[in-house]
Image (cartoon, rainbow, N blue to C red):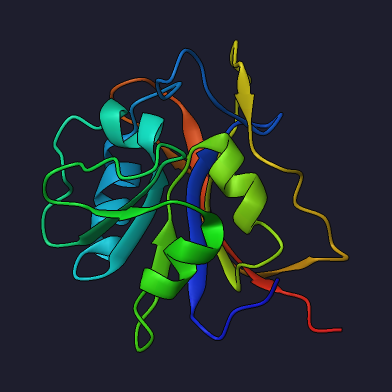
Amino acid sequence: MTSNKQISIIVAIAEDYGIGKDNQLLWHISNDLKRFKQLTSEHTVVMGKNTYFSLPFRPLPKRKNIVITDVLNEVIPGCEMAYSIEDAIVKMDADAENFVMGGASIYRQFFTIADKLYITKVAARFDADTFFPEITEDLWSLFEESETYTDENNGLKYSFCTYTKVIK
């Protein structure tokens, strides 16, 4: 499947590609959350239902929230519902960047469709039960990488990376 929409994935990953456990994030890095807000504000965000219900504030303000569910006719107030990946793509913004924000099965389904990855790489491993697909050089090219930062609250080291799809 391909799309003429601008689709980006945004995620924070551990060294082993871990992204969560028990439907919760593995860490709290304030600058990562600020970057997420800065990049996604005034844009469309796409997520699965479990990710939506794990959010502390919902729907996410100043964003069009598309929630993917397999329950036909399910409605979540303040959100646009999509009943498949294809349906979500149809509902995405045609004139601006759209951000896929999880969870794991949604990431997997968009991984080869997306044009760009915004990755926060956390230099640690955690007890995770949910993982992001491996980023390989045959599919993704590192476009930009920040310096390594240290979170002042938990001491975690992290960097921001942007990947673009390899054109074949």
